[in-house]
Length: 193
Image (cartoon, rainbow, N blue to C red; front, side):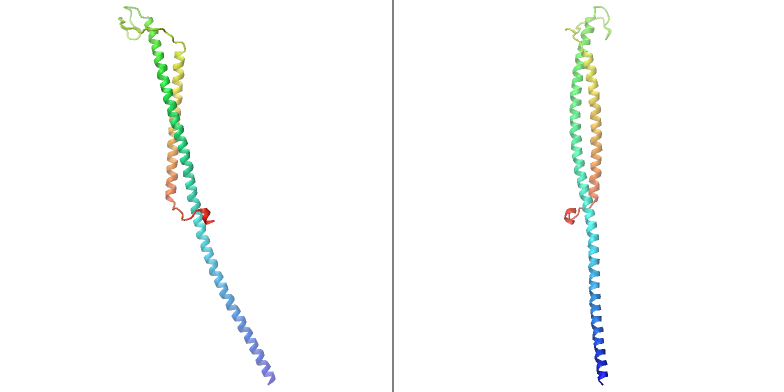
């Protein structure tokens, strides 16, 4: 009977031990499942945040690109305005040089006119009001050619400036359309970090 009692106690101890081990395993399984759920939530949040961060960076980059394009366009418009002013001044300089040269040429031709002889310009033999004054044409032809060259150069500069402004305007429009195609993020990239 003592032997049976001892075996019963051992069996009860083994049973209690196994029951404790089973309880520990059930508890460990419960913790493992909770950890798995937490990992799934963390991974889901990580994917969401990574997407939001990428979207925020793309949006901010597009805004930065637009700001740079707008600044570039402003610079080009200023350059275009300067080129137009330079062209206007060159055009006035050419008009003045051409007027001075024409007057000098008219005086030179008038000095060669004789009554009854045909005019080398119009062929008339009567010269009722020839140009009068002194012929000081020294350098007028050179001034005219230099003014004409300056105007041609200024005109080319204006055309180049207009092309640059048109190109920058197109580029800005493309950047703005690209930004419009993006959804504005709720948070900035810095906030997401």
